[in-house]
Amino acid sequence: MSVVNSLADQDFEQLSIRRTEGGFASIVAVHDTTLGPALGGVRIRKYANDELAAADAMRLARAMTFKAALAGLPLGGGKSVVNADPFGDKTRELLEAHGRHIGMFGGRYIPGADMGTGSADLEVIGRYVPRVSSAGRDPSPYTARGVVASIAAVASHLGRDVEGLRVAVQGAGNVGLGIVEQLTARGASVLVADPDPRRVELAVESFGAQPSPLSGILHAEVDVICPAGPGQVVDHAVAARLSAVAVVGAANNMLSEPEVSAALAARGVVYVPDFVSNSGGLISCEAEVNGVSDFVDRVDRIGEVVLEILDYARAAGVDSDTAAVTLARTRIAEFAAA
Image 1 (cartoon, rainbow, N blue to C red):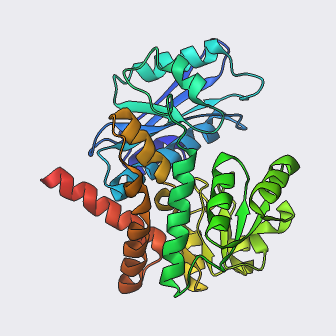
Image 2 (image 1 turned 30 degrees about the vertical axis):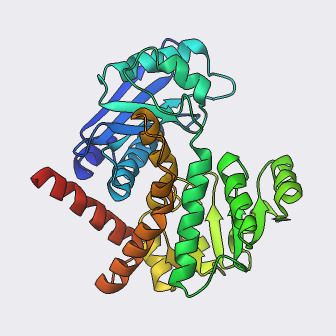
């Protein structure tokens, strides 16, 4: 489906694409600002073409809308992408060009850190926009905390406890390591895999995790698989071979397509949509932007939202992704009508 058709089909407010001086595509997608300005990360990643980069920005922006609504935040959904290599192409000039592009939105889109960017990059971008997030506080620990709260909620839903739970974490970046640390502290048995063996070694030596081959981590004999790296890793083939009884992760867009949620439900696998489980980072970013210091309890309440979604899905006879989107749209509509 073309980007133009997706704009209408997914009720997007705006998609803007500019070419930087180096010829890179700078893309800003704003999905919905009913609840407030759109907040979302700046992703610098090399895509095969600009169409795929724009499609990714749109998928992520749409998820941010639902994430904010379900977290009870006065924010909309947005995302921006630069189709460039974050290691070889990211320069101050590139960041400034992207910052000027974002500045055209006049504060309707608030950028934050994401794949390929960090607080130093946001400081550069912040010279051209009214507000940024992630410039003064790393949201990763709060993303991890929300994922662990979601896993605990799923364990409760299944009549289990985190202690003794077997979890396979795919990805040992800042968020993945935080998940491993918190799960092992609560008595879970954790497998971990990452393309970088040094990250796996860190998880093993620091937190007592067990190493696993990256190729088999999603099919490990565990209770929960937790994707915490790249997105779109759970497709129909993976869903059909899962040994786990639940999928709860930190990766954005964990599923290759929304229909995989129904396939998981048909097998009796509990799936928590990533825009719910990883919303701790957004809660942290919103608190930073608005100068709120006491917000950790809101991250912990993500578990309550997870149980609400799972209960709704069971009562309505729908998969959890459909349930979560329905609840999010309902909250947005109620706010608009008030």
